Length: 364
Image 1 (cartoon, rainbow, N blue to C red):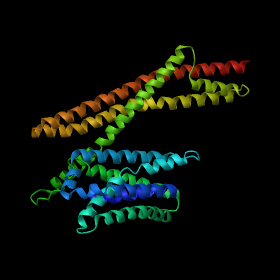
Image 2: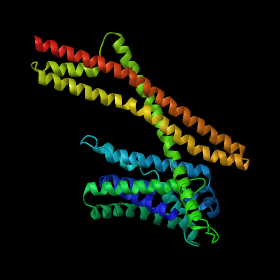
Image 3: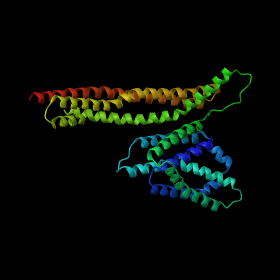
Image 4: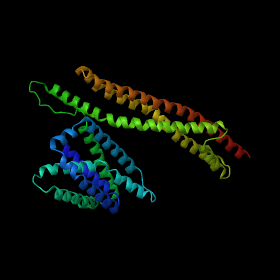
């Protein structure tokens, strides 16, 4: 599985870099090659058992899972967001900088190469490895561009690689990965099938914990931003004003001669955009408890396992995650419900006032 994960990381990075200009590809390849050549001393000092033991620790697995998840989420966001003429350099820089998992992967391959090449000149080996990265990475990106000449097909291939990388990375990075035990002949087919299904479900559920926590943290900060924006609107209305959305559509209403079709169109567009603004609060109201419940149920399983095995410290840590996920999810939902009620009442008043102003203009 580690070889599969390394292959997916390299392929995903190649398809990602093939979507940017060649200058970005060459610059990133040279910087990566210099970093690998500079890290050659550290690779020489490691040993295979120490490297394997370091990679098997829970902290490293969790950091790897968080990095892969964040990289996949940002990749999906950049792939679904069109880049305009002014944003193309920033888009290319973001795609290039997202290769956070490629340098550790190449360093791992360099360390393995160092310990397998017994008796070789390590300085020359480091130079050859860095040169291979500096030359081979742009060549592979060019091959990907020739293989998939259309930008849309390369983007779809990149998304597919990112999703597969996220699935495999989260599966490998679990503290209790799915282990296929030998099948005992005395067991029935139904028992064996249910055991395989239960283990598969357990692995899938554990793989969802880190994305759930990342989403909870993201929506927590997003709810704070929403609360600040709602307070700003409240202070503006307290001083006798209206929302910027109301002023925008009032100016649009006055830009043309008064007529009933034009009035209905403006009021309908105002209500549609107001609902679009309220949808964020509605989303937080429903999504907060769902994410909190998912994090609670997933963390409850290792907590019960720790209780049964006598691992009180592990059980206490998992119970902290259980309560934290629930509290954060309910806090997000509370802010969403509060802002939804306020904004729904405000926009209803604005729509009524806009309809009243349009009726007066038609009568005049």
